[in-house]
View (tube, rainbow, N blue to C red):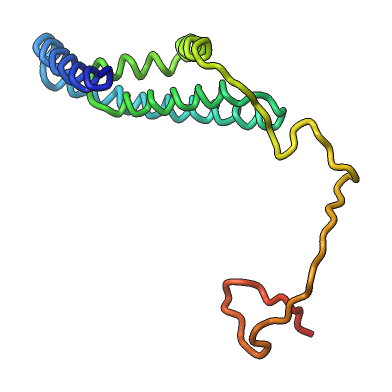
Length: 162
């Protein structure tokens, strides 16, 4: 129901704003503002997105919870989509999502309503292999199917040539 209302109300708000602003400042300045916000928004999304990717890599490198950088990246992606959509209302929401204080407030709002049951990283979190880096296993050498065949080029020749 909420999604239906959003798809109904957002275009109506955009049309009303285009009529009001276009009537106040004219057609060409209105179109120039729409194009300028799309270009500026693209640049801001790119720079903010690169920073969010750096924070995400840092959280993975330090084995911290990556949910906050992931949420910031998702909000930056949504902001980019809103800024590329022509309109004043969507641009305002998009620019708001690009400001870190708004993203932090949205993240804290959502985080207060979501319960995380368990968070683990890696195949065996908190456990170390019994014998360092040694992995025990068995192997069997397999002869090639066609010993005289020419390799396809997709794989390297497993037998070094003298």
